[in-house]
Image (cartoon, rainbow over all chains, first blue to last red; front, side, top):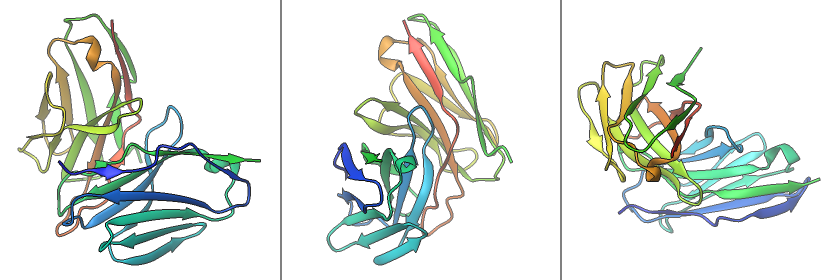
Length: 110
Length: 115
């Protein structure tokens, strides 16, 4: 059983701070890694995808991947109250369906 | 650009009733998926279709059937609804080009209550 683990939170950070969200996965053959954001009552929306070791930056978001440690993280700089949501980590091996973690609730306090 | 469209958005069923959830995508994606989301359980895969004409079981397939009607449409059927199937159901699609899977795009969800 392929597993994706996330701390359920809630993770509370003050406005303007850096939020750090972490995810570990069990399948060493995983090749594709995604972060989704889900607001309450809404569907998941893609924030970042990452396929290679290292960092990938997109605006205030940075995804970090370390395949040797089977670890992927998401950093949100200059956190805003509008970033308050549940963040889902998803992992895929080859062309298999995405396996999701249970998500981390982030609360940004104004 | 509609993306992934699910119907209905809300549904209440009595135990034992049947229904079909409809899903259509207009992005010419190869793969389509049905997930359910329950509090504290995350998104769990029910069934998926890697390409037109194929379907496979996911993590929680019991009590469900699916049909990949064509490349655009993928339906989920509950033959005899049970209270344990009360959940939010999401349809998703992805281009799924080898060697790496691409991101999945989600529909707006169907909130199903079985009483």
